Length: 273
Image (cartoon, rainbow, N blue to C red):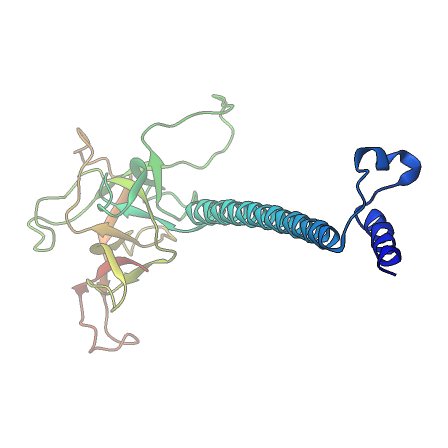
């Protein structure tokens, strides 16, 4: 009975450990297994299988970690690109530009787009543009001709005022005015006539006096805010009487007084936010 049991265990062991008699495996392991040997071999197989499974788990964990690292890196790259695009968009889209009349520089918080000369129509002309413009000091030309066909005309600008004015800190009569185009990061810019200070939460760009054409001159003309401490174009002093700016005063009547006052020069201020 014991010999039959041993033979059965031998046969089971052969198939359990993968011995194929048809392949001659008995030649490499000719010894029949005892129960102890069989259990030992099976234990080795299980240990080896567990080790293989653990190796697979480790490999999967390592691959997962690599994928997660790559995913984090890609997410960071995508975020960096988004930040870069947002910064570029802010640089391109945000900000405002204003003209600082009477000065050839901008505030410290502003970038000079260009410097130029204040210009406009001659005071006695019936036509041409009604606005005051800032012509750059470094013009460039496209096509041009010297024909006598009708055209609009712009002239340089000077201030006409009785001296001493009691308004400006220095003599400004007959001085030709420069200008500067200024870019600020703030999205909104406003010129407020009738005030020398900005309202709360707005930033001061510059303050000055509201100026336009003489009320008896051909119009229309626009109003500009000339800096209270103007610069002048070098060599530009002279009574050319071309495009002329005058101080603007308030008149009581339809305009309530107070808060306004009769015949008082109006201040102005340029503010950003």
